[in-house]
Image (cartoon, helix red, strand yellow):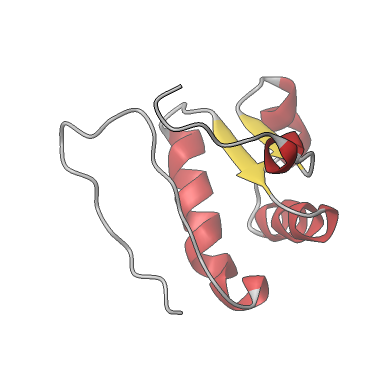
Length: 94
């Protein structure tokens, strides 16, 4: 699946998500730009994924000059491979 860059409308909500399918390495340029834009806008960026995915994103941002540790310390960049939501029942409307 190919990722297309989509510019949110001017009155976009506070939440934006980037969903991809396939090899993360091939998507890293788009993903890195997406996260770096959020960091520049002083947004909190959350990366959910496996431990391997989190490590790839960490390395990809660092390779592009992002001080990953500083962004994490200020609370702007959060990586997690915890997945407790996968074990919770889904209850729409509840």
